[in-house]
Length: 175
Image 1 (spheres, one colour):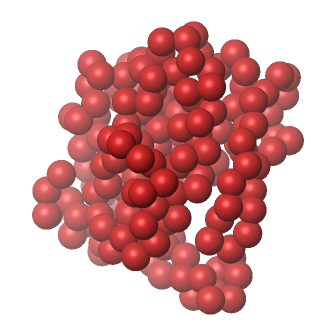
Image 2 (cartoon, rainbow, N blue to C red):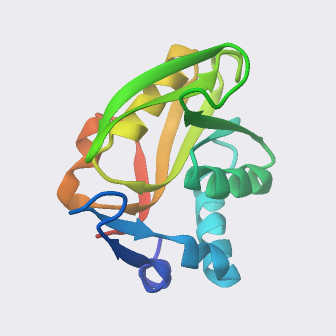
């Protein structure tokens, strides 16, 4: 990661006040997705760090799907979605967690990958760490090995990093 990449990302973030609830400042990275240069730079950065280290990418609904699928394609590995409760067909494993503004449950297909699979977990933002920690729990419950959690933006003041324990975490930008 470079300061220039962090600057590119920062320039493409948009703060949305009171979303999804009053008092929350949502970090919208859809302008980053719309800018090919920045989007490609973010994906290339992730690929450089994890080439030959992972067997599959797990993306967290919904923005994690966008960066995760692009990264999986560039790495030449498969992609597995982690979705909100009730959105996946077939047998699933689920984990519940607290958000900064409520509670949620996520699911993964019970047969998403084989035990021993090296997994990169991707999402757009790390806030309190609840979603990322729950995703790690699901991956490990299926026998996967969490190589790292990779996010575009880490909100330092919410200390989500602590929820991940000793797991590797990478972010392009910390705010």
